[in-house]
Length: 339
Image 1: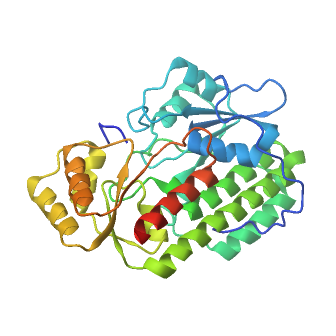
Image 2: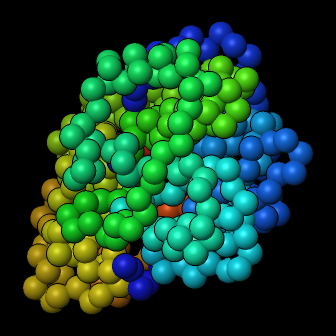
Image 3: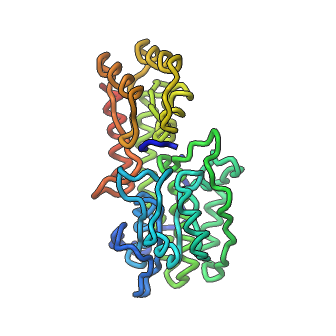
């Protein structure tokens, strides 16, 4: 993140149906109005836009608002063009948890009654979520597919999406959560176009199968490196680290300060440098979109000691899909741990 700063259940469906390929661009010209019979989807970032494209294929037109590393969703100021996109959207996808609060403002100001998928609500760690019963969830998915034409509009409350203290809102780094988000997108799209509900469900099932591949790669890391410590300069990749069975050794005060764009307290910096020097840290992970003098001190110390340093980003790199991006991150983590 830039300053100031501010995680798989497979569908209970066989993917025997022909999967519609994600032929639409994740970032077409803004406007949100497909005008050609396609469902108009607006996503807060290109991460969710790409996932929507995987699920919707040629049947949707996706507009992603935040698309590059120079834009920080925490402090992003949308344009009139963005508001127009939201006002014409059939489906809106946001991260929530205070990460992309600008979306809530656009929803309120535009007066749209579009369906909204909020990703944090599908995280097991979300404070308002009592947890998913995965088996029941799969049964619900099958039932929803059988009765997609009974879709009802939800009353979405967008008034309380501020940053939640103690909650890591970067849930797209949790493949398990993302699989649930894809299911939710398929449900909403199926409600908007019941004739295509089976196609959306099949696409989401195929996507979930690929997410299962990510989880298998993470399990491989856990089998070999469970319990090893990593230092994460701020919270973006923590869900992925945890899913790999690794321990985040970073003092919370350090990562919080970096996330908020604040100076790290001298005592916290000394504690953090000591952790790196003590030899217990196997890898240091930074965020390509944030940093500062304290982060550079940690990186310099790690490099001087021969500890691998890798960097993860928040937005989807150009030319990547969610799956290829996360797989590359997992491979980078695995390689670093083996160094």
